[in-house]
Length: 240
Image (cartoon, rainbow, N blue to C red; front, side, top):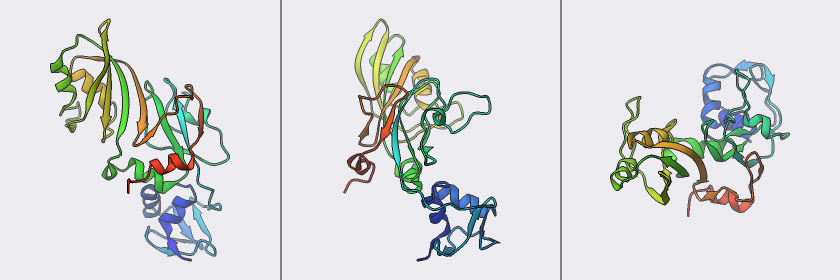
């Protein structure tokens, strides 16, 4: 049965559909020895000889998604040119799992890794607006006015203006440290740290505890991971 070429690459774990489309448009993919630059080209994966960067496409891997408790100090990438520790050093599987989105090096908590290109696209593309929940300990003199500032909008250094977001006080302040919960539907780099800076607060710790309806397993310690259950995968699908 014929499928769109970008979908074939995604299902084989090469990349998300969006990234696979870019690879095809760049001329990096051949079908039966001929370069194909149309991501939507229909191909029969059972009979066509597909190659990416000259390498034959392996048979599609079984889809696998895991939750990792990413520790502080570990990069949410597959490699680091400077030799830093990455999630690829922690998660060793036969399948090539890649991070679903990012979590800053100095942040910790729930990071999904998957070879399911469709799932990765659904969880990372801005149009789906998946909510992510963070627990943040922030240092600085507290006031209710600061809570209003945190809820936004906040202008970031690059000029981007964040959307208003739910922020609630979970505990404190104790010794000038307040524990806050942020629920964001956008994921600008270091967004929460800039939001806190706008309120004259300094982030002491930042932990992602949920992606959509999926929460970080409290039994996991930093650096530990496990496969998602079928019920947990369902939580990542749209309601209804």
